[in-house]
Length: 231
Image 1 (cartoon, one colour):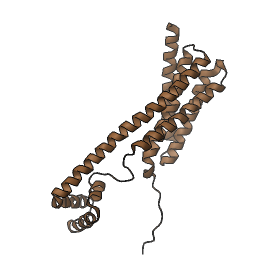
Image 2 (cartoon, one colour):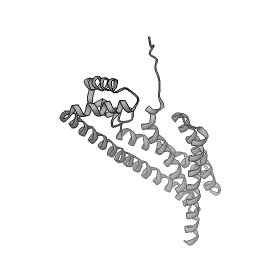
Image 3 (cartoon, helix red, strand yellow):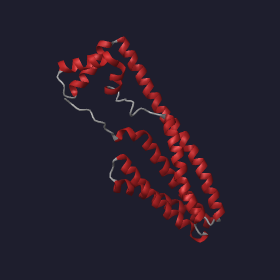
């Protein structure tokens, strides 16, 4: 007799984890880079803070809108596929049964057993069976636009607030290096946290986030210096 036991799989986190990491990463990088670039252009600390605040508000709204629109498009595609599949099940159930059985044969079942499995699954919920095994759709991985939008906007705000706080506490002469250093430290912590939450290699996750953050900071600082010199 098989004894059931609870299991927690990391794939169930992919929807909100992707949005959370994207939002926080973008919040830290874009806000810190904006402030470092403005500071490099010889702006005053007050101007740098104003630019950072504007970047926080604009970025959070952009993340929310962008995530909602993009994930809604994914959800629309999923619904269209389900509607199409539902119509095919109504119009030609025999063909759909054979199609599902062929999928199970491809996974290693005998044709006889595959036909029985397809028949029993379709008797319970034919659309769910085809959505899962033919289309690759499930409740765990389905698109959730509102969840993605709120998660990204919230984590972007938190991420952007970190370099802003660093800038507010930094001496005027050291504002840019302190913001850049703090941003890289926050990115490293974010990469490590994302790696742990997603079951990935922590060093690899930390390294790739920190690398792209450092590149963004360096480029915006160079552009700020260039335009500050020209002006």
